[in-house]
Length: 510
Image (cartoon, rainbow, N blue to C red; front, side, top):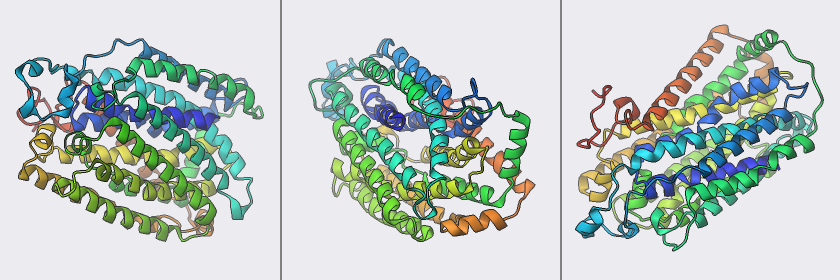
């Protein structure tokens, strides 16, 4: 039930970004990327929530109280957004979504609200806090799952994790379906003559999530524990971080994750302006992608436990790069400007993403030590959530040097197509580079256990791991928060603004 609720909210919040920020407020692609990263930002702080859950039990309970508090925080943020006054849309006449700028009348041009994109922050920051709430549920739930997973027989260990994550992804798809139907009105760039407003959807979600806190309290069983000594816990945790098995796997997850998550920043602009993807179709394909992800997890649970994990990751990444690159090029050069072709790209990308995720989780289960379950699981899984936004933020800054801004995409010139091609090749080249780090990852369960027993320790490398992760975490947090502030969104460190725009000069611009 807890994973179902987490999956549903996690499916809705990121899904509303495209119709609300891109379609309703007409925000730039760089802002849409930052908004997506900020809504997912709490996952990067998973380790700290793990330490909180492990070290500071409430009334002797380490899991249930935090799950209850998490749902209360999430519901408070959802109800807060439900009472927000809704911002005015960018297009006063919704039909302007369906016509090119050359066809707009003077009366239509006067209805444009140029300040609409500045309202993005008022939507994103509360969504980020709601995500912190349901993550405070996820962390203790993960710790409970790990305890049960370690009791599974060796030859079937991993089944529980795979099925739990499949359930979460299934309900995430349900959340995306809700957005597909509720946010496909003409004001969002869709085709329906009905829709919900953003506050209305947040109110409905708050009502649905409200019973999950009491359910966590009354239905989850755990034994009471004595209050651990924080100093000894940190000392024990530090000893674990110095082990080669831990810092080597963390290094793989971080460096491969940075390169693998280098994305095409103009993607949302292309989706709206070139292929005219409606929010409904976008959400439907997101649902297909979610089921593809869940199906891949199920296949790995049934068939992939004993595969060579290096081969599985490499094969799926190469397959994804080849097929995705072909499809994006067809759209870029106007050979096939179909929204289904463009929307199919992330669906294919879910296969390698799911394989990388579940293999990493299998390995993490083998490395977890009693007493630090929450923190170590949080560290090794949060490494992915640090690497992904770090890679995407870097991509945002690099992509800003090309002619791939929203006005460029609307103009659809040869120069624009050329620069979009450069960003596509850069994106998929980075994904191929991510495979260089595969030797850092054990290729099976027995090699993981051997690395754990025989790997040795290194204080210096353990310290470097902590420093790199903390620096990356602080950097991308600051960059993306600044991107949501109209006063700082055009600084060079955030990716800047389109050259020639009113806000294109900032104090950190070169």
